[in-house]
Image (cartoon, rainbow, N blue to C red; front, side):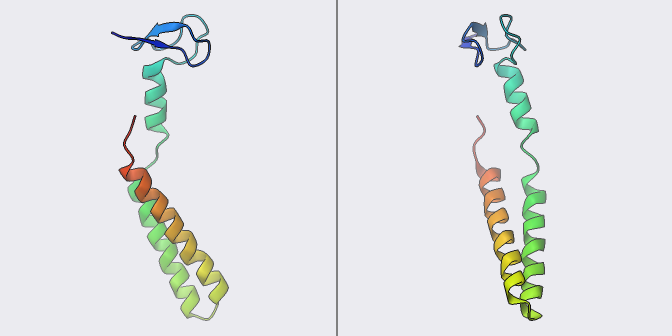
Length: 91
């Protein structure tokens, strides 16, 4: 068991403590669990980015070039960000 500092009040608490006894802020363990739950599903995000890109490609080829470019660029940006999130090391 190691001691860490509370992110809210600076009090030393055990790294396994669910909350800070001084101020009630989530402890290091609880903060990690919350962060991992907020991550989302990168595989689903990548699939939606590919779908958005393909819709943009179809729109572009049908003659609506500005809207098609918008969808294709949006799909590429969201896909790149999702791949980055999927490969990012967790803390």
